[in-house]
View (tube, rainbow, N blue to C red):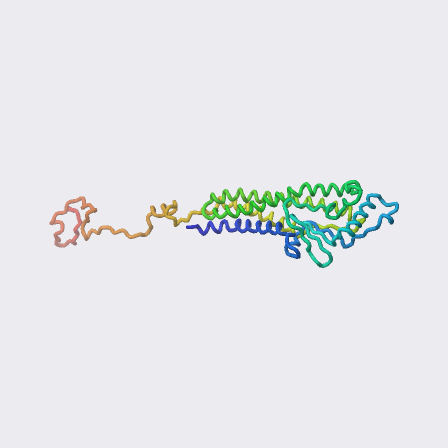
Amino acid sequence: MVNPGRVCCIAAPFLLSIAVLICMVLVFLAGTFDRNKTLDDLYFIKIDMTNLTLTSSANLAGANSNITILGGALEAAKQSLGLKDYYTIYLRSYCSWNGNDVYANCTDPKAYFWFNPIKVWGLNSTSVPADSYLPKSFIDGVNVYHSASKAIFYLYVGALSAACVTILVGISAIFSRWGSFFTTFCASAMALLLVAASVTATAVYIVLKAALNDTLKKDYGIKSTLGGSVFSVSWIGSAFAVAAAFFWLLSVCCCSGRSPYNPGSKEARRTRAEKTPYTYERVGSPYMGPSDHQSVPLNTLGPQSYAPQRGAAYEPFRPQGV
């Protein structure tokens, strides 16, 4: 029989673990459905190209040659590839659309995804290698994002897996504090992985946004912004994970899972061994005579002792000679 107090004790960490799992599922599903505002609004970076301004190289006399080449590459990409008005980057894919056709053209999700602007925008289609005319800050920012994209994916996958294991192992905590003990390790791993994923993703995408804006915003009107929703979900999930790990640890010390009404429990054995107070136990009465378990009086009373005497009250147990 399950102890109701034990169920109440693990209810909070169990529900927090489920909340962490929901947050992770949202991050993984983001960008996987076309025109789904609820999920596709969970982007890490949004690139706005609606104010893109391009000037042909012929009108850039005296301008920096690298800016001229980059402008020509963007102009060629717009004409040949059809650059979209908006691009949103997710954990496993990206979406691109024009006008009000929000979150359309989402790519198929895949592991270790990273958004390569040089390839997507066709900046390497010119006769000059992209690395030679793109600013160093842009190249460095994209390289940092590329190198960290795998680490971010691994951390989120680890956090998602740990959340699933925590919930499964947490079921055993209903019956025993040993279950809470093992669940605490899973919950601690879940919290560490998710916090690390949130910190890494926040830092990396801030670097990528700065690299894109430094190169493209001033001269070409291309603006990049961070997605507030996905970072909120990630950090809220991290807070839930830390709280879940703490409460799982607390449940190790509180509320035994064994019911006191279990016949094999120590409480039940102790209850049976103790005598219930205020119970009636029959005792022998003198007027009924001694029972088999009662001893007779120490003094010998002869028949004359019970004979009534004149002027004296009848006292059957009065000692002789008094």
